[in-house]
Image (tube, rainbow, N blue to C red):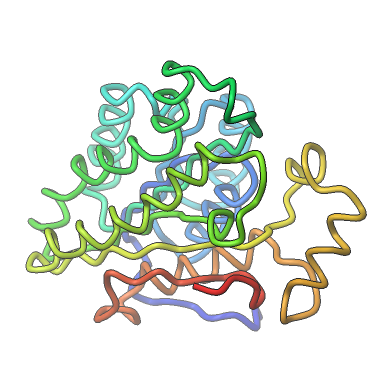
Amino acid sequence: MSRFASYPSLKDRPVVISGGASGIGEAMVRHFAAQGARVGFVDIAEAAGRALADELTAAGHRVRFTPCDVTDIAAYQAAIAGFAAAHGDARVLVNNAAHDQRHDWSTVTPEEWDQRLAVNLKHFFFAIQAVAPGMEAAGGGSIINFGSISWMIMTPSLPLYETAKAAVHGLTRSMARELGRSRIRVNSLVPGAVITPRQLALWISPQDLEDIAAQQALPGRLMAEDCARLALFLAADDSAMISAQHVLVDAGWANN
């Protein structure tokens, strides 16, 4: 038996997750599926996405994958409609997909600006636009926008990513007001330095691991599963009166 919580309200609940094929997104797909939710997820990594969906389906979970580039808004909204046709209108939306490629601010072009904001922010809004009518008709729902502590701690070489992630806070607050009377909750889940295979391969060195450990109030490494468990709570009826909040899971690092 797991030592972690089970949420009866998530059983059979339709959930949409972006960027679900790896890292934090994969952990969320696995955790929501384990709760008995009907999970639909998108990702540009088609092979990894299909492998994850096939694995979970074979284990008896209700999981569907659609390969999709979330910067193609029409394709992404069509994928969301496809999940609704199969699972019912989404009651939970997890806006997770993002790209934290490092960059030099002095060489950024207008085209690069538009592309980075599209992959890190724009699709959040249009996914909300796609799911909100169904949530309203169903009597409510939960939208979880992924932020980041990177802009709070001034991580270098990420100005476009950090601009988008800071804007997620404004999007969350504004949409919580817009949708609240329909009992749709909108919150930001704000991770710290989550240790994923991608981060270890590209950005986090052994020295970085030591520096992160020194900055965190709690010992140990922050993992994707820590974010997924918070997402479950924010999606479940247990958090029915929580909205417009920015909830950090960072082992006690950032000053928010």
